[in-house]
Length: 217
Image 1 (cartoon, rainbow, N blue to C red):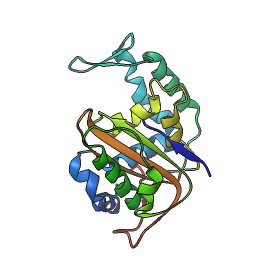
Image 2: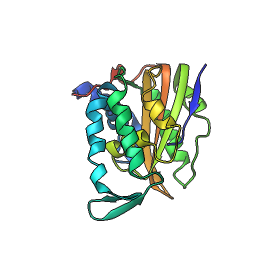
Image 3: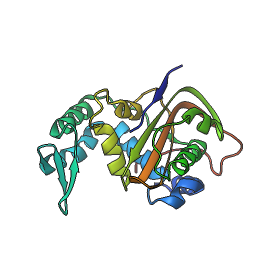
């Protein structure tokens, strides 16, 4: 069993997103949006590299200067972005992740636990097990301070400062078939987004709607 712990549109699709109650009430970033964004990267990584290309012109040394002159100090600077672009241009596409209500509820519990400013993983497998049964391997990513799904996924793919790029590996892991996500307020970093992955997952009890692949339309 492989265990990976990491800190970094159809009508029916949106119905499933609405059924994931906890996190979406706390933040504007929905579980559906995060899983959909990851699937965009997984299914067409070469296309997704274009989004990272747009960042290259905003670097001044190791400082990322965003519109409005907001400055983000990075550990690796442009080198990490260039390395992520090379990865996306070369990696094989993967199957889309299936959006899980139970896994998203577990992620929402995690966000609620961290609202006071806490960080870290705790016990992801136990949280996922509250709402279903996971199988195969599992993993978890956490992103802080991001306010939309694209920023969350881009930051985890670049994985600045983490040479093993384990957040990125989770997103592109071919052994992961299911994912859940949630976001909420965070006392220290303003926002927190928790994302869980699993090779298999059976919802506990009837889901609000059938599990759907979060495809990109």
